[in-house]
Length: 386
Ligand SMILES: NC(=O)c1ccc[n+]([C@@H]2O[C@H](COP(=O)([O-])OP(=O)(O)OC[C@H]3O[C@@H](n4cnc5c(N)ncnc54)[C@H](O)[C@@H]3O)[C@@H](O)[C@H]2O)c1
Ligand SMILES: O=C(O)[C@H](O)CO
Image (cartoon, rainbow, N blue to C red; front, side):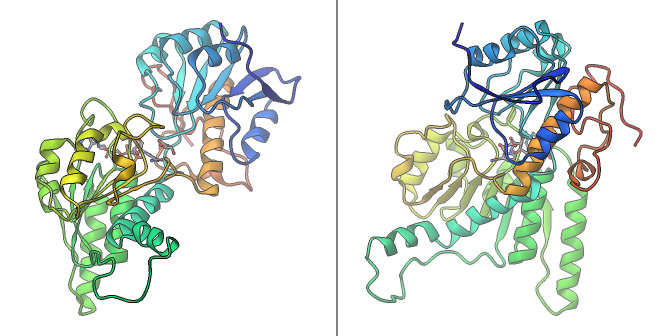
């Protein structure tokens, strides 16, 4: 058994014991819990990634719910420990929940929450930033400047790609993929090709309407195409951004063969999950194709990078910060806390996790519902009528 983990306690006499495995931004989430008779314990350990044993120690003998992080391994061991301690709810402070074994949670009757919606625009903005940084070689140019190498304007200095009129490819056109597509289309007048298991009707309508607007104003209209296969996107896209969930259908979705059909000067962006890309194959491809560029927010073996990646000038790498805006991170903390609180209080689950705004309004009390419970149906929970 691991040593007891250090904690900070809010509302020590609260009836329900809720644990957060990390300090989270803002204070609203703490207030929402303490106002509803929760004792909140926040882990203050300096370890970035807590082990299963650390979290078992935090759960202890009695625990009503846990707010956890995407770096933690929520499987059989933790859900059985939480259920034994009387726990009813766990929420990831993330929209992605590939670190959670939902079947194990179902087995122990524990509700699993996530935080959709509040991070859509923030994450799409980072994908757009990486797209721009890669196309205009901003990181390389910044390093060059700081190294004192700039000795005057030159016609060939850091020549990159113009986005206007090129094709943006999106794989996984859900909330974030669609928001990213809109930014690139409206901002840079790119044409769209996308691949998803489902039709992105709202996105298609947006591009059609924007194309008509441009035409009416004497400009070249933008176009869209729903690809019949992922390969079609990879062949045609100039900038391709990955936004699917991580599951067995998307593991190593970008591999050696698929990289080989992409344009030699294409840009690949990944703000989804690291294992969606075979990073070893990517490093080889970057070495062999110096004009091919990538912007990566996520990595296959986080927090590590595969050997060679850090040396590649044609790669921009940032440490999983796509959702890192203040408003989003505070909102994620709020949604995660309300998922746990709602289940403890026996509230229904919110029937539209694509619209979580009512939970984020600081000036009014949140709806009496759990904002997003991914296994609500498996557990037979009731949907909110609000
Ligand atoms: N880097 C970050 O900080 C960050 C931030 C937020 C989300 N994410 C990741 O982004 C993912 C997407 O988030 P979202 O809110 O847009 O989710 P979403 O559910 O709205 O979108 C995911 C889309 O992927 C599609 N999809 C699933 N399997 C597919 C497949 N095999 N091929 C093609 N498309 C497929 C789905 O149909 C859906 O449209 C999350 O699951 C998370 O892993 C990362
Ligand atoms: O899935 C998520 O929410 C991200 O990776 C963290 O913001």
